[in-house]
Amino acid sequence: MILGSVNTNREAVIQIAVLSDSKQVKSVRPVIDTGYTGDLMLPRTTINELGLTFRGIQDAILGDGSLKLFEMYAGSVIWDGKIRRVEVNASETETLVGMGLLEEYKLEIEGRYGGMVRITALSQL
Image 1 (cartoon, rainbow, N blue to C red):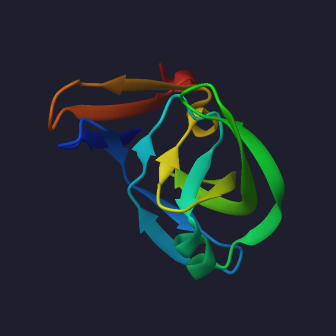
Image 2: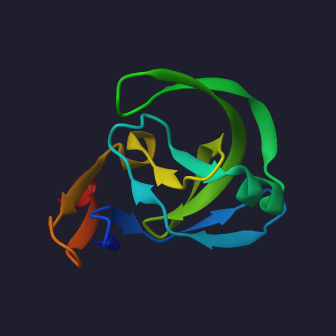
């Protein structure tokens, strides 16, 4: 199970560790964005700091339904206690978890400041 909380901006936030191929680790606090179809979006500065491997250009559907091209990098995260390979999209500022990482998981959000965010594997229900 992955736990988080709702921040003062009414965003559901969790904490995860991002790993590079060279075993560098960085803790990040992404906002959960159910309108983002990718796995993970990180600021370019974080991608550079970790030295993630460039894999190409990828399109992603944003929350408003628009399509945007993003640079895609290979990385890993510690997700639900396990190392999981992910595709990382580069952004200028945002750190987001998208529906790609939430696939096969149940997301629960208490819609209030300080509310609990809980992500549970469907196989555990």
